[in-house]
Length: 176
Ligand SMILES: O=P(O)(O)OC[C@H]1O[C@H](OP(=O)(O)OP(=O)(O)O)[C@H](O)[C@@H]1O
Ligand code: HPA
Image 1 (cartoon, rainbow, N blue to C red):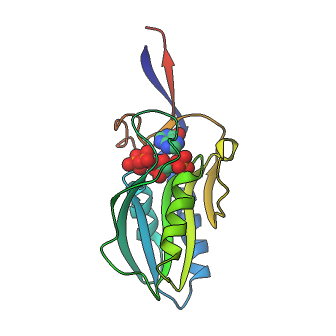
Image 2 (image 1 turned 90 degrees about the vertical axis):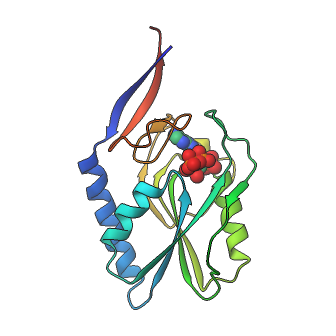
């Protein structure tokens, strides 16, 4: 089987949307600093583009939590591979995700971080795939709501490949 990718959102479309999201977030957090919590690895591209466009003071920390292996289905279990470097108590935290699919990663991550007494904790995702939700999560900022397709690019991978694509595309498997 050959892997084929068709463009869903071009780099230009993504940047426009991220600009709009940053504008809204900057308005909502006026007078405050935001502590961005970037969930590795998929969110790095989105997190960088978002951070560059925020007009309020920003700090960033990274966490690696995953509920996926090399397959395209969730295991429903959270694995913390790398925890945050800094304490978050008293900080206005914004979790930055590339995609919410089953919701398992984000709901478990959110619960864990809530226990650390942040001043506030909100969620931001570039993509939301609600058709596949297994665990409800309240998402504060969503870029695009997408249908049930497996997407790659702009940080998103299939078996660790395609993260570096500057656009988001749908991955299909076709007969050679
Ligand atoms: O809503 P869910 O079904 O839990 O899926 C979403 C999660 O899956 C992906 O991460 P992944 O575990 O593949 O790690 P990666 O970011 O390093 O690719 C994505 O970046 C989200 O964190
Ligand atoms: O559609 C997807 N693509 C890449 N990684 C993912 N993790 C959850 N859903 C996806």
